Amino acid sequence: MNRDIARWTFDIVAWIAGFAFSAFLIVDAVAAERSAPAPVDATYQAECGSCHVAYPPKLLAAPVWQKIVLGLDRHFGFDASIDAAAAGTIRAYLAANAPAPGSKRYETDATRITTTRWFTRKHDEIGGAVWKRAGIGSAANCGACHGQADRGIFSEHDVRIPRS
Image 1 (tube, helix red, strand yellow):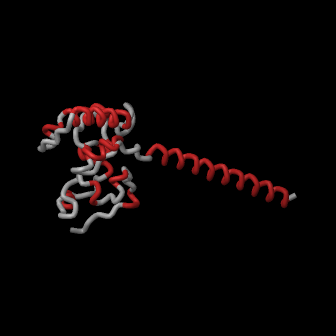
Image 2 (cartoon, rainbow, N blue to C red; image 1 turned 90 degrees about the vertical axis):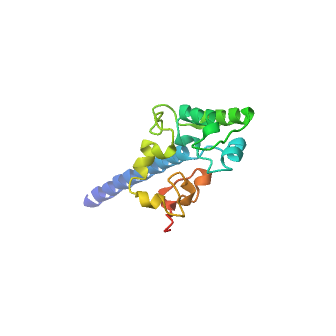
């Protein structure tokens, strides 16, 4: 009788563990799909990526992207003007791939990625002196620490902060 109870207990524990592991794999797959970078538009990559990392559209809300593209003649202190056709293509790409209203990254009050709530929360342990290191330059230089930033991947496991 004790053997039957032990076997029954083992079977239940094995089933529960298998179910929990399967649920973990499903949740992990869904999370990975959600965090996968959007396919990069060639016009966006060519125009914006020629000066800095072509930031993934998921980093700012569509209204903010629109404001940025419409203000390229005064783009954070520079004239980054492009022709109307390219600007239209870029605006459409950014709007289609920006975070949805209600998501944690949907903020319309920040006009810089580095001033969004989620950015400051993710980088709250980084001191001001680190951003000023020669190998970094500013918080906007994602590629200095995130080696796959150009592909829209910002995994904390791949961060390498330059020492100087």
